[in-house]
Length: 600
Image 1: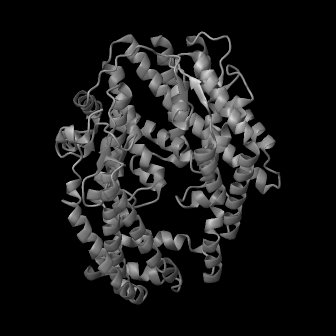
Image 2: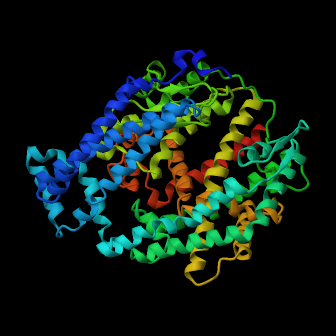
Image 3: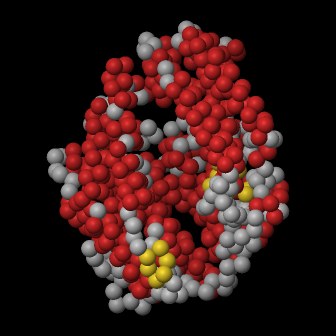
């Protein structure tokens, strides 16, 4: 692994496009300090008139823009080398500044909601009539969203009590996080080379992908043995988290816990239920995949510790960055010349930090600030998975680029609900390109298996998680106790239902729910499944040559966060509420599985 100062500049992102120097960062920090003095005028003008509202929102936006720049720059500098004391300190300063700003502006929403009914709507109508108020339209969606949620806002005294309970309400998640990340020790296991390695959250999946079945089994048993030993504590923490969800839903006048998180995206509960129902109808495809895995691995009994075992070995993995980028560009050619030019710009203008270096943040992400091109962090390993990672992260980057260059800042930020669509469309288009061009048998098998595992992990598994959450909350709302026995039985039954008779049922997998951090952020994981399903339909439309598919998709990317997710998706011809995207996704799963069977 080369030191960062030895890496060619072309492989490093150009954060100077945000701040030329750290000194410029300090100047902006001081500027924001000075702008705090104007918060009193924001408070004074906010509810006086349409003009006052516009001025106040604009001034707030300028402050929040600088705060975002300060944090993103400092954090990305720190991500270059997490041992840097300079950027650790700058990140901490920026974080504290953001918290301070958020607290100082906390009066805004309550003040706007306290206005008489119809006032904000009338002011927005004035923005249509007067040129001087045209800028107020930049904030219309935000304001209408605020009003949409008004029925779930309580009195000032009640809101204060709820806000005071926030720290206590976070206790179940905090307890699980500390237990899971600090206290639980899983020991060590011998890997396929006979070397004893620590069993951690990070090494577990690596060990589960070992070609040596005994290694997989030992890692699996050791991990879940520890969760079993702590299951009473974890069950109590999760039950408290569920009760917290129910409490806040009732306090905010929702009938059920599931309604509150779905309300934020304006998603009906029926969509959640239809996802589960459609996946249930298509479980035979999942069962077929499980049985095929059992056959390929030549096992009399398939266990859950075999679910990550590689089905295709000895695949060529020689994909340096330049070659990977050429493959990605060729795979994404159906998106048009403008998109291709942006891919070129991402390299030429140094959006991407490519190489792994000492102290650099692991993994990959896309991030950035409004008004500057997006950035991508990679740790390029030169294997085929790294090629897909480039396509994935550049999908996010292009979404951000199109949104930021089309929408005003207030409407540019898109929600998690649609965020994974763009990245997954890229991965699917790349998959189909490789299947059309790669001739080597093992390579094709590897690509198809990679594709199938996306359906298994992102759609089937996340839907199973979503169903577990719904059942757990439903039981608690109906007065049924959430004990470790009831939770383990519920999860074990679901796992057996989703994987079918081809998968052996063992005690260990019934404890899997106890290690899933997402369950402490309730009714979130279903978005992975819906996002992937939408991406499958969009990619299918593009590859079929449907008229307007590419332009509609680019328009969707350009819409940012200017509307509710379901409306945004309709721009790309995706009607998620109809259930069609999930059906299309399930048909594609079946088709890919059939192709994999033929390729063996």
